[in-house]
Amino acid sequence: MPRDSMNANDAILGFRLVNQCRDLGTDSDAWRGRLFDGIRDLIGAQVVIGGEMRGFDQPANQFESLALHRVGWPSEQAERSWAEYAESTPMERKPEYPRLRNFDGPMVTLQRDQIWAPAEWYRSKTFNDVHRACGIDDYIISIRRLPRLGHFTSLFIHRAIDAPAFSPRDVELINLVHHEIGEMIGGELAAAAEPKLARLTPRQREVLDYLLDGDSEKRIAYALDLSRATVHEYVTAIYRHFDVSSRAELLAQFVGRARPPRVS
Figure 1 (spheres, one colour):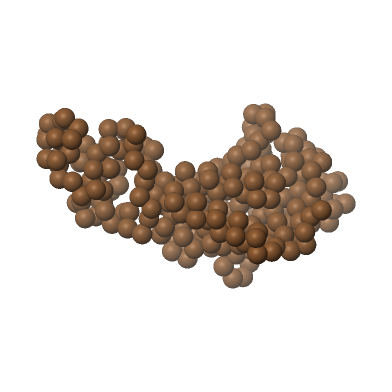
Figure 2: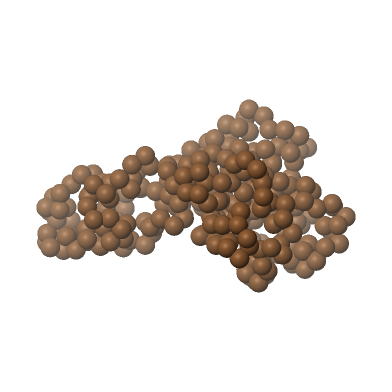
């Protein structure tokens, strides 16, 4: 039976998930993927949608999505249907927007019934034409200001059709996790707009590993059996990728973050 409030064990599980994300903090796709999978496990969610955005507190025509990830769809058709709705419907016409846009404080986390009366929801086009077609029903939505960056992060979490509604415990747990994650984005956690490790080639990742170890280009060339000129080309490409001009600036990108996993 769903609990009415979060307990100490729930909080431990929430902070454990936050720490798992921190361990992947240099890779924005990796830590966000772990967050979304963890949320699905924590509260029995089906679909998690989230990302970062600029201008959420400004007029809708100034809204800009910086990153968007969607996981957990029951089918490719369901995902396509949702994407079509999300991309074709202006922000100001989405029913949650007026309630969320002008919130006070660092964040707001709401369950669907705090936005819609249940009878109104099940009569609405939003449910019948969009959510039902995508196989999802009850939801939690959370918007968090990012103090380091001056924009916002969002979570839009759904349960499947015919699944039980989310409980107050679930809402509290999402509020806790999202609050902690928001404190770290741009610090311990790479922000969406930062250069992505996944866009380095395998050889560039190898060279980056040696640079993070403090090795010289000469030492890297010896270890990888490459010419120094070739290693220098890789180093230059890495600097360009991270928009830095020196090793000190490169290393500064990783200060306060967990070491990225080594290339095997």
